[in-house]
View (cartoon, rainbow, N blue to C red):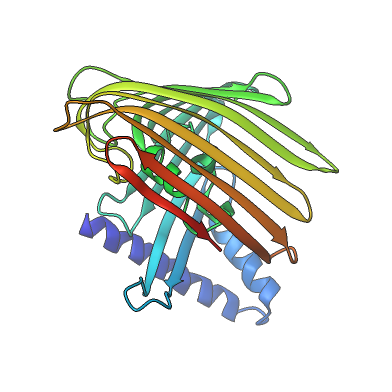
Length: 303
């Protein structure tokens, strides 16, 4: 994994050096810099992009958290090929297992797409949202605990109409590992998207079921699954030129390793925002996660 991490760093440095030599031959203006970089790394068949997030946390409480971190340092290569095929390869150098996406997809028609490989199962709208489009630098606690996970499998997705869309998939159920019990993890989502001059509205419902043997659940906040996993919930997001309102609810019935009883988990977040300008906004989020067996994990506000 260290070799791959160093390779990603080498690609970033090589791009930086090439880009610098390109722009030195031109007038030193911001527009020309952006255009030179865009011409080098963007086309329909090959699109190279990078994302780096930096975050600082400061608590006025001496026992609170004070730290600087890099939540994301991603390198993504994707594009469209002949015959309706496309690909997506994405890494994150901040993770021990740095592979995120490794997808080969085929467009069956204009409304239907079939994808195989390492990918997001596709239940939570917030988890399906790209990092650079999130309200906060990190996703909500409930999504991180129950839905934030890449899996190996196959997914069929598409549009039922101009407003309704769907996604169904079958996965191994133990992240990016091979299937170890010959049982699958089944995932489905039905969504509604609407956009007008008044704003955009997204509503979705989802469910997932599987039986796994000692499999880590998402980010490892909850104990490993050893038996049944049933997750279900819904999400809503409204946004216009001034305001943002978003909420997501997830519940789960889980069998943990080392526990004789099944756990019932419930969590949610409610997010509100006001746009000061096109690039600036003030956001407030309330979130909680409660476990019947383990007690409350989080109940807090985030600004």
